[in-house]
Image (cartoon, rainbow, N blue to C red; front, side, top):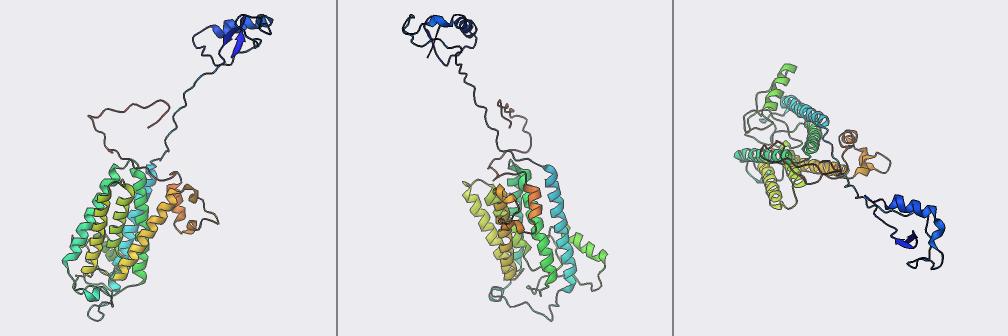
Length: 352
C-alpha cells in the first residue's frame, strides 16, 4: 500500500479508468510532499511518507494466438497436377513401346512363379480388382474434397503418384517379361512402329485410365511393377492418413478392399508375384518417407545428418512442402458455399 494526502491509504494497483484521482491527488501529494508525516503523525497510522508516483496496474487481455497456417498455394497444386499427368502419359508411352518387345507366347511361356503355378487363372477376377480400384479411388476423391486442407493433400497425392509412375515407366521398359496370362487379349504388334503409332496407342491407354475393364487396355508388357497394386495400396494409405482415427471401420474396409483387389490381380494372373511385392514395397516406403519429412519441419534442411535429404526427389518435395509446417489437422468442411447456413463471424484478434 502507498500513503498519500494526509495518510490516506491508496492501493498500489488502482484502476483509475474514468476517475480523476491520479491527476488530482498525485499533483497534490507532490505539492506538499512533507505533509505525510513520518512516524505515526498522520491520521490513519501511515508510517511511510507519500511517494512521488502511484503504481498503476491495468489488466490487458492476452490476444488469442493465431492458428498454425497451412497455405493453399493453388499454383503449386496445379503444377503437381501437370506433373502427374505428364508421368502417367509417360508410363503409357513406355507401355506402347514395350508392347512390341514382349516375347511371343507361342514360344515363351510364363516365368516360374510360386503363386501363379499353384492357382488356375480366373479371367473375371481382373474385372473385380478394377471395380475395387474405382471404389477406393472415388472414396479418396470424396475424402480429399471435404478435407479442409484439400489443396495440400491433392498436391501430395499428385506428387507421390507422379514419382511412382515415373519409376514404373522406367522399370517396365528396361526389363520386358513374358506374358503371365496365356488368355489375355493383346493387340497385334507393329515391329516398325512409328512415333504416330506409339502416340496413338498412348492416347488410347490414357483415355481408358489404364484399366482393361473398359476395353482400352489391349497392350501388353507392363509388369514390373504392378500399377493395380500401386493404386490400391495408395488408396488405403490416403484413407488411413487423412481420415479421423475413430473411423477405424472405414480404415478396415479400405484395407480389405485393397487386399482383395491385389489378390484378384494374382488370381487372374494379371501380374507376377514379384510385380505385386515390388509395387507394395515401393508405394509404402515412398508414402511413409514423404510424410515423415512433411510432418517434421526440421527435416526440410538438407545437411550432412539428414540422410533422407539425399533422395533424388528431395528438391521437389522441398518446393512443395516448404511452407507447410507440421502434420495437417483433421479438419473438414464443405468446399461449396451452402446458402442456408449462416456465416460465422470472425473473432477479434483471430483470422479463420
